[in-house]
Length: 285
Image 1 (cartoon, rainbow, N blue to C red):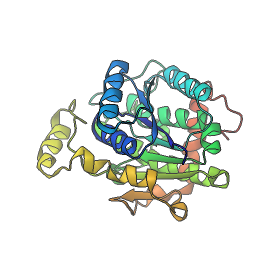
Image 2 (image 1 turned 60 degrees about the vertical axis):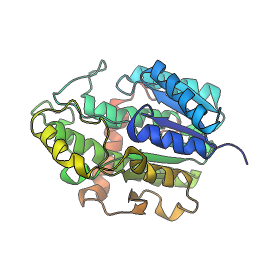
Image 3 (image 1 turned 120 degrees about the vertical axis):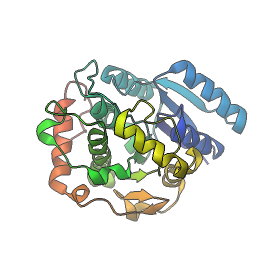
Image 4 (image 1 turned 120 degrees about the horizontal axis):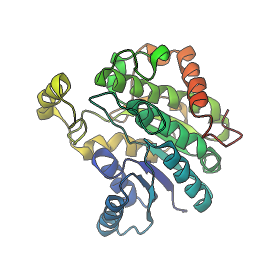
């Protein structure tokens, strides 16, 4: 059987690292998209030592830098014929409102726009591989609503609200991918990994940090948090769940707003417009 070619963002820590390790054990050829290349190389060696899998590769990709995302997509396009799995795992939460070098609010670009650009740029390879696209979302989406009149949080900023909205967008994105590309063999899913004990949110202060400290004794391990991602990447016969949201390896209910088709379509159109200078493939409509 041919190797499964799998791309994963945010693989150097937490859930992403455990997901990469589990898939390497199952023989996947892994392309680790990382911001910190030396850290990625150390992880590559660690995975190879633990699993014997030598098909582990590191590609620099900083999701907060859209030029870096395009460069990573171009590099993968030059190296690969097809992609079988794309796991959009990386994410971030920011205590204060920040802008990236392209002028986008950091939560929006890290959790949504970067992955939108990466995924759509790789779509020709994903279609060739009849790929599964897996977006790591969160139950935090249930406290969110799409704020299309102020996506950049210029009027007022809340770290938790911005994070929740970006996780809602992860769900919308998976649904849209399933709708647009199912006929081309694409399956797309979103998931809640659980409340996982990692370094995520360590930069938070105030109420956000208090919430994390209170929840910490009840958190699951990163290995447990990776289980649903691995399930969606490897389980057979998931076609009937295309576009669905998962939790604990089972289809789960989303918030009511997460099922709103008008909002989902609006997000896609706005994302294309915001990223128009970076989107180059003709079939990304």
